[in-house]
Length: 274
Image 1: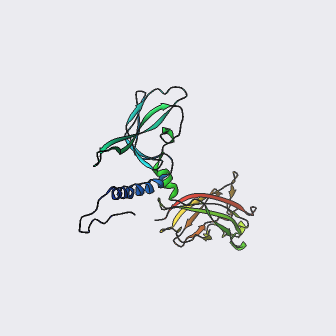
Image 2 (image 1 turned 180 degrees about the horizontal axis):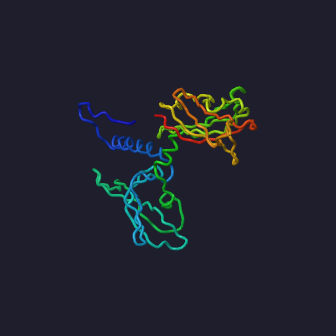
Image 3 (image 1 turned 135 degrees about the vertical axis):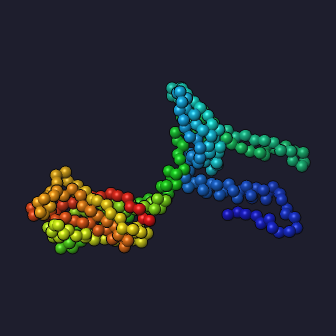
């Protein structure tokens, strides 16, 4: 980060170059932070929309566009002409300064934005109001895994011969784990008999994806027609699952009716990591 040390004695040589350096110091930081919310029209604060009596009012606020933080001046609209949309229109302005040599320059620069009805256009000074995206949308996307990681499941035949894949990803901002999968018990008659059904380990998640407390969820029997358990008493609709503090994914598989050799389950859930 750019900075200037003002603590040295002797009279600091303040010139336009030093002032420009200071200006770059804060604009670069602002841009870096704002770009975390996306490169398109990004809502930073304010600009809340209210509707009353057919009139829509957009409150004052700030947005980031084309590498600049721009203040929006509150505005209203009612009837939008056919073929037109409501645009955010950016207007630059400048104020003059008299320099030591007597010359005058438009050195005090600013940009503000207002509403304007017109044909759909996205330029350096205009974009549709509907294109404005809240900062937290892309910021949230950047704060979670972009791709699913996978864990292949293959248990011994004596433990049901379960096959399939568990997929998982992490949301750093929410500190949560999303986990989903489709698993098939190919030798379901090898599960423990009811009512002493057991939790069977399907595999373990890596470090960084392990909850601080054991979390439980349910998986669904995914075929429309249900099957009886091995006692012929209950229908298999759901089975209990869990992820413990070692990252082990365990499923409380139920032995089905003796005529059923295998069955499958599916799940998709979000687990707090704290």
